[in-house]
Amino acid sequence: MTDCQIFVPPHIPLADAERLGVGYEVAARKYDELAGDLGDRVCSIHAAFSSETGGRLNPASPEPEVRAEALAAWHDGLDIAVAAGASLVVVHAAPQHWEGVRDTGRHELLVEALQELGKSAAERDLRVAVENNRRYWGETPDDADPRHVDLDALDLYFATFPEDWIQLAEDVGHPNVGLCLDTSHATTVAQEKPMGPQRERRLWDYLAEPDAIIHVHWSDNYLSTPEGRLDSHCAVGEGDLPKAFHARIADLSATKTLEQATMERVQASMRYLREELGGSG
Image 1 (tube, rainbow, N blue to C red):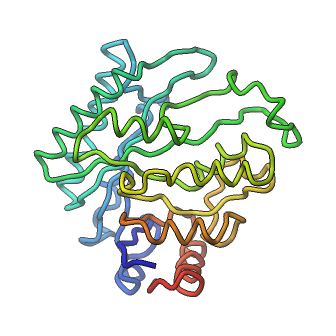
Image 2 (image 1 turned 135 degrees about the vertical axis):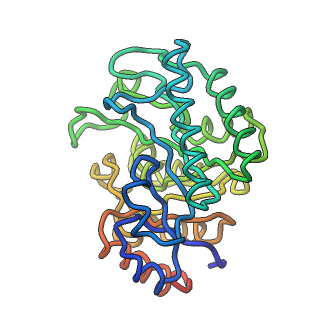
């Protein structure tokens, strides 16, 4: 395992973060509330992906007002990163088909939005990482064979599938814009394939262009059971993603956030990194 920066969620107490030598990744809208408890260890900001009223922000919308709201939230993320002393801002892409409405966004508008964001990030000496989104399975029964599910009827974000996510970064083509790999999200997409080698190969597709990945939301999930259709965010080593996959994540030249919801699971992830992958966590 190569040396890398490890970030954790803000529910980890500052004393533990200092003891473990880790930084924080903080949601933009939580920063003001939490800043006093996090010292100077905030390293990345996750920009908002929903509006104040709960609807999804859409930076690819053809409607100018909708797009402007999303862009404003992204730029707020940059400003908060500067205030926090962070170096990275994570963003979600945009809804493509959402809540029964098809073509809610356009790829070329998403590219333009990210190019604009990359320019603003460069002026602030920041990097932007575009996260791969999860596959939303909706009300699909757990025992439904994925080959017999109408996948086109499900909600979908841009940058959900590995080839689209990688292509998006290539189309943006800005040195300050890279990719954030969310391993739990990737598993929800791999679940589209029949159980076995096809499903595992789909997971590995997310590592086809490792140099484009500048940040990781690192957790485990379940490749072999329908539970993996959920965004489980287990401790690393708690699910059944291949150890070789985790080892490749460990060797990426990227910062990594252990994205688990409890202190116990973050600690379990760090033990796995240390004992199974040879890290220093």
